[in-house]
Image (cartoon, rainbow, N blue to C red):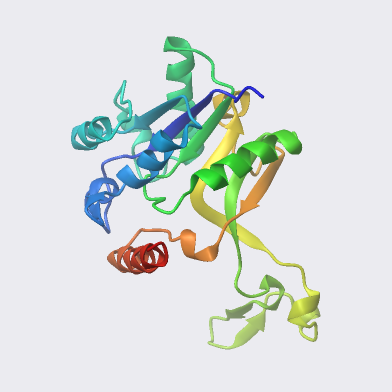
Length: 235
């Protein structure tokens, strides 16, 4: 079976308020984004790895760890409000215009230090098996969301779904949230700038301890502890 030509896009802008230079801050002795890029390089699953950044320092680090940075991302796509789909579309537009048209687009966050080649392989198999337009990593909520509680303005409790007050947790279906690791899409979907809420999509459930969203120094500390624990388990 011929493997599909996959373009990996790493959206790694320079700005980060809570962890300065987050995408290249050291994580276990290597720049953060070196972990997902290193996994992709060694996996044999992707044809090209393209980093989209607006920062020269990030670009230099990316090139040194085996990724391409053939352009600098424009300022209009580098603010706090631009979504991942728009950044991916810009990168794929450039790549298709200047290189070739890949079969699939894999967007991986530079902070996804635990993303694995096995999960990427499973995502590729899923997108073909279900014939959907996008597959992304997701994590099961630790508790049933049907039993969620809110606090009112006066400090009292309110159930989000009071009809489930008496339901047993084991009788309620699990719910999932975006793991913030990767999105695998068909090329036409990426070129349309579409996201999973508007196209037929599927999730790939991943382990909860691999989906640490690193946004704060506390998140970084938690991720490093998990990494150390997992590293001990391989020795």
